[in-house]
Length: 88
Length: 158
Image (tube, rainbow over the protein chains, first blue to last red):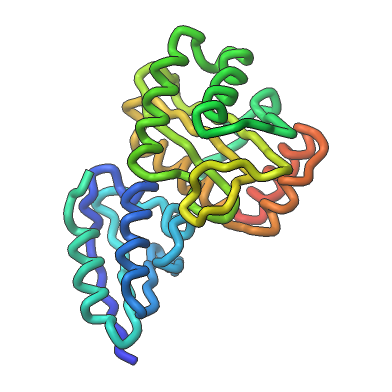
């Protein structure tokens, strides 16, 4: 299993609120890999909207994106570009 | 999380045995209660209802796990206003997992309070992602029981 993890900065102007969290989960669910997000030492399931919301990620926050599985490379790239773009 | 839900949610804004037919009537009933307890101005209801429903159009805030978190930021709201409705029998809220919801929390924040709004949402998500807590909340028999259950859950999370 290939695991990719890297820190990145959230660029969505309103942070990871409910709508971007829902889109993130939608993208994450299109891959078989396990997806996780880590913020300040807390790791949550990247395929659960409520778990992502509970992190309260605002714009400019550093998080670690973790993808593990056969398609982790593609999953990581897609989710990274989503988190780093401002889609609000 | 330094946000305290009980700073914004008071027992007069907790509705038990909640029943409603659809999304519009759910939000409308919650707003009526907030008007009754003078946290929302009666004249603002139409506009707030419109904005909250527009937000729902972009994607349901019933994000799974039997809960819905309709929310909006509005110039008409001072700080943060919260209303909680509990429905023993689940209500349709066009949820993402197609399940009915038992717990609905309406969160309204001032337009300028983007940071506080996100913090409040995060805090709510932390409280409500616990399935056992949702079960317990669903079965409370009084508003005060709901309030003390939330207080207990907040203490556990701290």
